[in-house]
Length: 283
Image (tube, rainbow, N blue to C red; front, side, top):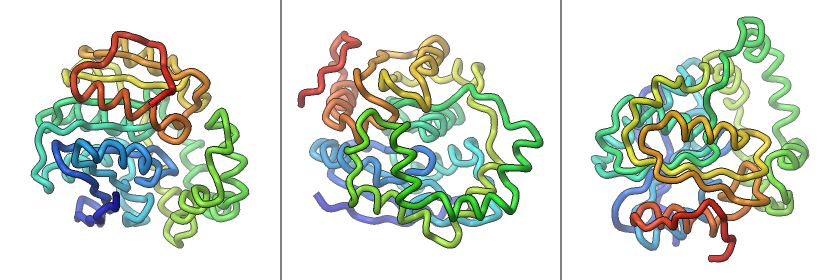
């Protein structure tokens, strides 16, 4: 199913979205160093039942990458709310992965009105803020050189060995799509600014205010955002419906086990998610 492209003006620039299908709205938010492309397999399946919006956060994918805007998680969360408002959406199923999961949770904290359900997939959170010296180093001019030298196909292949259990899920075509935004001239400056603006992880008191029914999905072998972070969310969020884990899965279930992930989403959206914490990889 082909995607329709949208470009919306939000605070700081133009945001790119891909739209598929028809039906009630689902909004997918990617993690750091990814884009809407990471959701393509799941979005195609969800689009058989829903209107699926996959966005590129500012600084990523095909969205604008200004060097001088606020790239903090809370600023990105407010942009997610701006997208929902501009599209005139209600009863949105909001799904976020990794950094995008933390951003999704913050959006639901700031204004839960437009959201009917929340799904956090290996969502980041509860991390300490950078120390001043770390912020200076990571946002310094030399980091632009590091980004240009390391964000390429070779660097990506090294990185995926840590984020997935089976690196072969990323073929040459997939790697090319992931790496393409890194080649944009604006990307190094945007990443320097992101390091400067990055906040400490979502706070426990913020989680306690989120009443939206929530599903937590994690890879059991996730080394980037380990399952213990999911346990913290389960303890703090007041309306967690289920916390499900996927065996032999790392940080990218939408790439490693897209059928499993899609099935859990569809079941949760329909209100008939099985009472199980054991993942079945069949479709």
